[in-house]
Image (cartoon, rainbow, N blue to C red; front, side, top):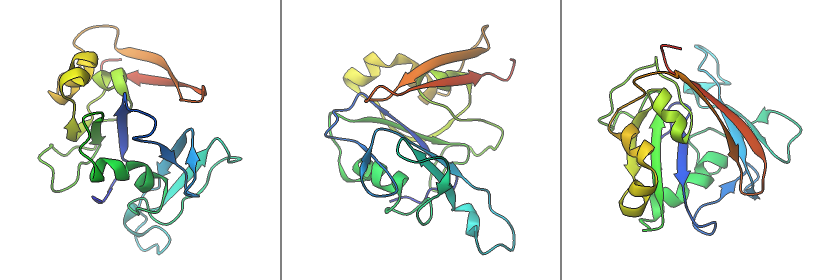
Length: 181
């Protein structure tokens, strides 16, 4: 699995439940999880190269230390993303982005852009370094095709708010804003 150097978010889109699932740090399936990558601290042995993280899911009582490092295949991020690296399924669409893409990527590097999900990406400048959005998915998700082409909002409103709903019905409010907000 590719090393995740900064907080990596994956927009996993329109996929059968059997194909992709969220796995928690415990290794068990969860409806949702949140990971917050901690910054590197120079001279600190506790946060080597900024690979430690905080973790929360629907079963936790709040933030807890992540299992191992964020680039490990044993934690929530690694377990949940493994199908992207193992399969080339026609029933799978994905968009991988970051504020600092891996060194092997051709995406430009910048720390001045944020990250969000779905339509919200048109309000930010995610650095897309890998994607699979073909055929049906490209037709169903034209906003993501726009993001892949590095195109963004061009006029007001300069912000957006949407409700995201997990497979089990948990709701989250996502806020995004463009630089002119």
